[in-house]
Every structure is written in structure tokens, then in C-alpha cells.
Image (cartoon, rainbow, N blue to C red; front, side, top):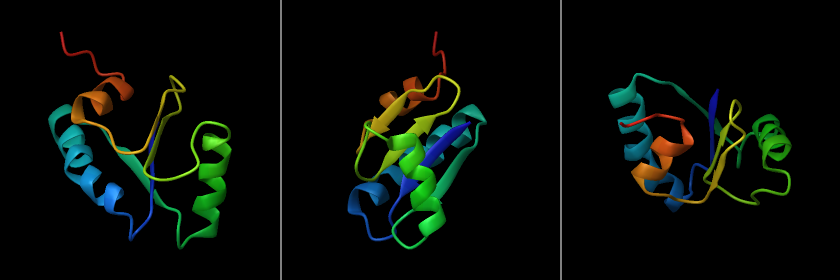
Length: 87
């Protein structure tokens, strides 16, 4: 499962939207998105996955590989994080 944690007013999170949409469209995958600045339950969920890994958003976590991305990243990093083989 691919998880994305973000804040509604987070500029860096907004910059990642086109990359996540492209990832989903081009590779037919789904990234589950959780807003954490205004949703306490989502913030708790992020804390479980981000413990010691990341203290802010955007935060991406792959539950299968345990790979994480903390902060904004290029599209290629998202592809690698998602475990997509581009050979």
C-alpha cells in the first residue's frame, strides 16, 4: 500500500500533486492520501509510520517495502519509492 500524508496549506505538498497524479495515471496504481493538519486521526496514522523517519509533510510511505520519502521529491524518486521497475 502506498500512503501520502499532506497538509492542506502545505506548499510543498501542492507541488507534489502533479507527480502523484502522473504516477497513478501512468502506472495504474493508487496512492492513499491522508490530510494531517486538520484531521487528528490521520495525524496519528502518520505518526505511526513516520516515527523517527519524518517530522513533516509531505511524507510518503510504502507499507510493502517500508521505503519512505520525507519532503518534496522528483518524479523519479516517487517511481522508485512505489517499487516500479522501469526497465
